[in-house]
Length: 136
Image (cartoon, rainbow, N blue to C red; front, side, top):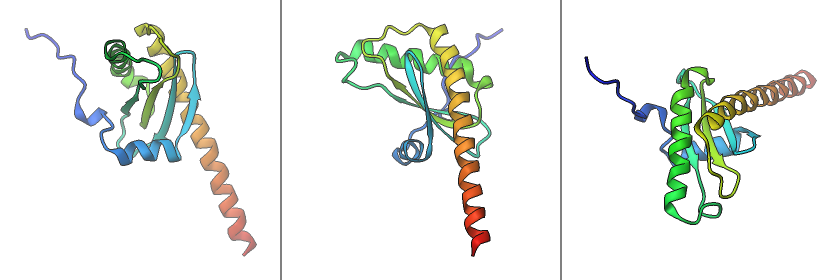
């Protein structure tokens, strides 16, 4: 019996600059104790992850890469619980020592919260557009 592969496939990653720009421009955000999440729905049927872990908060590469690894693993474990969105996880607490289970719970909560905010904003935009169209 073979060992299960614990990988992070390309189809679950945000790789292109235009995808990150779209999330930042059109997405909704939710901030938690250890991270901020920006989300925008996609048409793929599954979530995709982008990471933004800055040098401002973590000067040295080793702790910065550890934060990335914990964020990536939290996402990988939470994929079935996440809505079909493109999301960017932003490390928001300087010099954070992230714990996997805490980050995983927070990721699920914040992504759902940000997705609900996006839907509310979209519904308001559509109502406003319908009202403008009716006035013509």
